[in-house]
Length: 151
Image 1 (cartoon, one colour):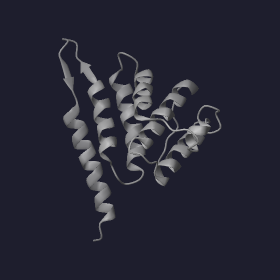
Image 2 (cartoon, helix red, strand yellow):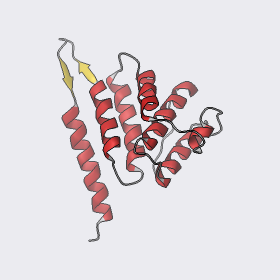
Image 3 (cartoon, one colour):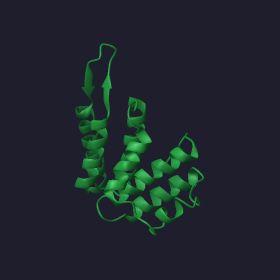
Image 4 (cartoon, one colour):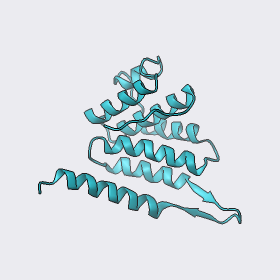
């Protein structure tokens, strides 16, 4: 399992973990692999025993879909940067792919974040990176399936 230490304030780490925990619950059940991924991420970032995070990590409280989307908005703010959106997409993708399956609700969550990520160049022309995200998700899913299918 690959997790990484997040370079952010404890508040940002807590918000990110709330988003990830919400993403894990978004399909109605937290898979064992997702739970392990979340715990390891929290532990590596020194917030596994945080009073706000602990009950969420151990299933004593859950984050519903609406709370997850509110946490995303709080984490990204009103004008998120491309880098912030990409980091969030990578973090959620890591969680989603930890159990080897991508549910419909999880895919919708990734799509929603991608919709938030509208970047403007100097001329003010905006573009959306949706095709890149779809291609990346497709490539990752194919790689997962290749590993699972017998040769």
